[in-house]
Image 1: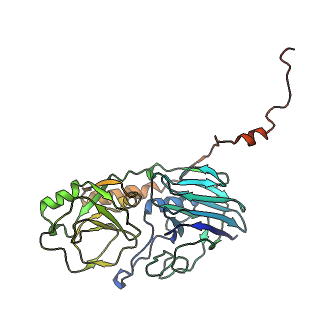
Image 2: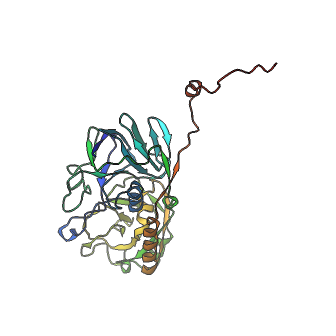
Image 3: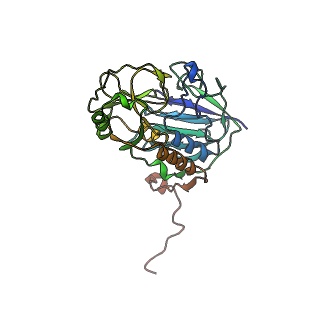
Length: 339
């Protein structure tokens, strides 16, 4: 069975992403993939898909979608976004069946920067270099290498109807405060005096307003370098924290460049990448250094979260409008109390 997901509205940076385009860094092609890998994998897991299947990554600009040619099972994972089905408020993370003629809308809320919409089935787009991940700066992957826009229609192969009535996801691991981000120092922390490394860890840092899928810019104490801010360019991983000449750290994210020539004082550990990505502009945070063994243990613990089936809890409406209640036959007769 196949159906289509119609994009009725989409803000900037709403893209198709899978687990990423790996193995091409030496050719200058970075992985792309989700900004919040844990939320992305949770959405796919709850939809019954492989953890790295193609899904829609939604920015704060939001999205509105409808089903065509048949019902579609959908899972939306977000932290703090405002979600509605035909105008009725839904949980921020919800599984449901979207019937033709109904619309699901996702808008920015009090917290969170990225949401993920997984379809029960396979979004049918051609891979490029083995991946459907969209990298808009180079025009690779996704839907013609670009962000999604109103009027787009995504064919869903092997479509399944999903959860039926709306169910909230029981996924407490998605509630992650961004106030403390774990890092492994280096690879060029020796480009900074010990007091500057200490200042980096002490912070506090504020998430700037000009970040995107490429980088998170931080405001706070300006760091100084021991011997200048230029190094021989080397490879960049997601989470690498460069310190350019102005002294304010830049955390490189999913659409980062493949190499960089500024010293990298530390690297955010994998399980905290999503925690950082979900921090809205103005959020305050600090970094704490951990050994590699602790980072590996945290990665294993994160992977274990997705092994059991994700529990779903029925959504119980408490906001019935008066006109609906008046239209129901709540009384089947009249009793004379004087009898």
